[in-house]
Length: 474
Image 1 (cartoon, rainbow, N blue to C red):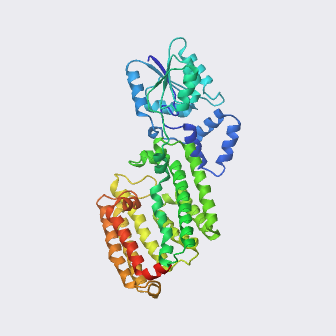
Image 2: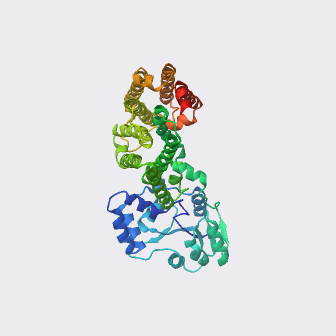
Image 3: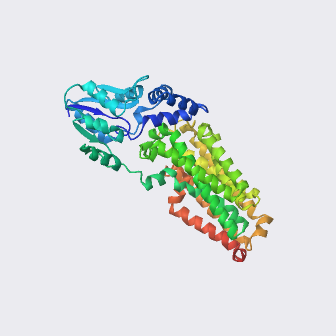
């Protein structure tokens, strides 16, 4: 290939710069959406240029396709003339070109000019190369007219729809990557279904109040699903917001959104559907639970947008978000929250939140950008985390010696077995953390850790055993 034109969105990168800039700008101001609508009414070229002028994109961390980049470097070393031809804003395309250093020219959408797509792009490439053969590397239906004009058509991860459309036009495509697939596994990973385990806290009021009825069990199950859908929606929006940071992170760069496996547009649609489903399920449980869920959404949104970047405040809010699930569980079955459960949950989950930050400081050479923590903070985080954990166990001990326990459980003495189990798990988890073996999220560690799973089963058996006659009666 002596002369080659290459598309940017979906071809050179597994993503779309218009969606990237629009999503970032959307989070920048309450009035951003209305401004974007005005620019869109003036034309897509205006929209792209205005967004490119206002949004900073880290082009070095974009999800470049290694096979395409390797192919271009090989062609360049063989003397080929390479052109980046894209409908994206010229300023962004030029920065991508400068970063890769393989392109001889950039053909892109200019302010006040046409949206350089399909026929417009084909004409611009023909004008640039003049007479003679040239090849074009693209990926979507918008590239069909360009492929028709090119002497050689190369498709990168084309969908079945694109392949059928090209065959119908008589365009012979050379496919360099396997067709893309938004697999169920990718969506499960993006929705963080494993994080739904945190929502099992909703069942704690059901377990401790011993109100074992069909109604309370069903209400708790629906509440669990509602919180799960809301949490997944928030996780998706959070990942869209943190794309640049995730792409620079050692492990988060492989997330479906950060890697380009799932598009930003599809992610926004999925988040919207999940949030609507969550609100509908909450309304079915009851107005009190709906209020609790809305409070959770507001708090977790505040954490995502602002509080996660405030030192200490971030871990306090994380602990509150855990404890709030217990409160929501009480609202689901209409029982009054126990001060003992709230106190234990606050201290215990504050310890886990600090464990999460300690793991980030210990496991990575540099702490997460924007968090405000330094590696020198690790001893203080460790001390506060273990102290909070011991405070939680002290609350548990005081609770076990209360009249409330003697009234609730047939054999309250059995409940004292919870104390050594809790002490063992907490100190072991902190020891794993200080030795660099803790996952960035302690919840994931607990799910994957065999000993943790065994301890959870033992705790459930102990609680049910302590209230066995009442449990059978229910």
